[in-house]
Length: 594
Image (tube, rainbow, N blue to C red; front, side, top):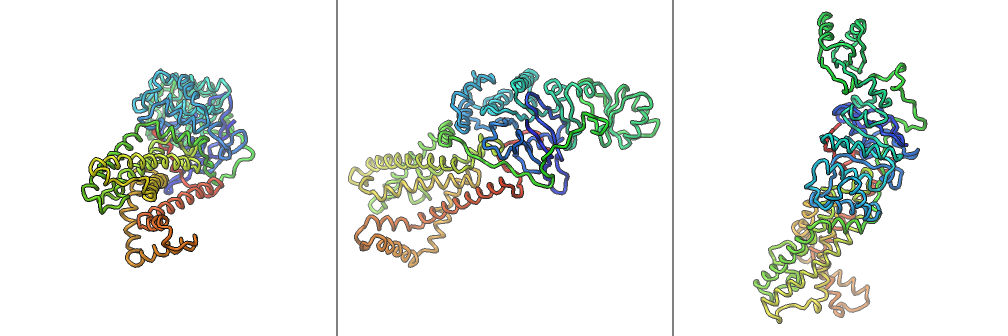
């Protein structure tokens, strides 16, 4: 059983909280309906329940706080809107990628696609899916780790009746199998037919909590909805005339057994101002009764062991994918993006090598020849391609968040970061190799065999070229992880030769730069015990390592690693109960902003 205890959102700008003191149960084998109009607080309540949004209160799963579960997605599956997957990824590829995150075999994705009726369209891109197909895929994502409970935030919104009926039937099947379901919605008739129990929200507070049959018998009758600043006086007058009046709280009442004309005449005779007078047909919900001692269904017993209301409930402790390398490989190669980027980088490198050859290859450093690096470019084309692939690894993660900080694995988990660094480093090495081969071939055609440097002979240059590509890729990964976008990740890489390196060159230029290089050579001599003129290859590598661009790359990588560690430490402290901060996670709210 899932217990929501005292859920309260944090107030904003001197406004009252969107939801306050919500306490209800989600019982196994039942569908609990959370009913309310737009902006009543349903979405906020769901986000607080799941730990996606910080606030006060607690969520218990069989007596254990949800945030303390090692794999909460196996306890609760959630549908919080449309599937935020990449539009060019197929449904099968999307689910198989998530199978790796949850440590499941790929066959689980195929089984679920058949279960939700998407087997025939599994290889279509998500961008071509209709709204109904997208909602079916959202159900498949929620059911992927086989959770015991489902939390569904208005999954039938804007769907045609046939699709809505299918969704409700799937919900009922899950509850019939012993699962617990929380289903939010605005249609009282449909929710009463599907749910076993109805919890009514109004203005961010629970105004009723009763069985669905009782709700349907008392609330779904034809009535007159009235709103007036003198609602209590009008209610007394109507009750004297034989009408049944239900107080809705505030200035609203629902009148049964009378017509709107009769209510209007009564108000007119007694000089009562009306703000609303409308007929509500059978099947529409009446305004909910205020819970009180004479309304048994509205009473809710106090839960023992509840978290004190003054204590903030921290966000859930993040965790990473179970198979991060497999996940990253499916994420990277599930799209066609790497191939055109790699092809453009290799082609640009070959063209750059030809441009360098035309400018005079005799006086050009071997690194520029080998990498196809014209003087007009801040970085070689292949290094830029490696940086773009690295930035895409996290840019796509946050732009189309398959992993969310709600219940699924955390996209910034250390193991996943290590997997992204490994994959991007391997791709960078492959790009460096392909670019070197393409550049050598282009130079051979332009200058002949005698004018082409041999990569095998220039071992230090070749190693430096490979290290430059890997460093650019890793800078792109870490920068996109920190800034959450591909553009800023690539911009951080470009800022190294355009901003950081010139600044270092200014600080270390002239005699200062020479002294810095001499200090490095002296340190190498002391460490190895060899004269400074003996190991020319090592000294050449040291001189290359002290170049402003190399020092700038190392400095940038160090700063990004420190920023990541600081962010991880802040997340860990938040999970241990520090002052909550509103989540900036990737779960999208495509409807109700409560």
